[in-house]
Image (cartoon, rainbow, N blue to C red):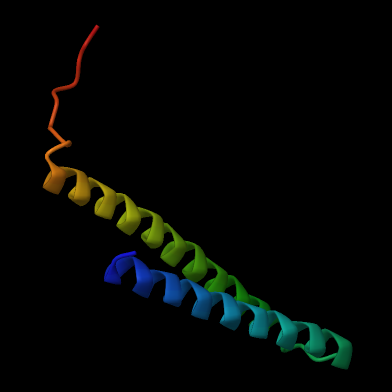
Length: 84
């Protein structure tokens, strides 16, 4: 795994952990009868969005790594789109 993909994977884990913490805060706020559960759920949604975004970055970085390795081996060649 390249450095870029590894960094994105670490960021995915961090966002996931933050989302879990925000969800637990929301659950405890509901149990306590506080209105802060709304804010905690908004933060959980933002962290979930960040988690998905960084997971997509991992997929893209790994695809770029595969293409760069194929180019280095000489297996990769740009081909025109064939029209039928």
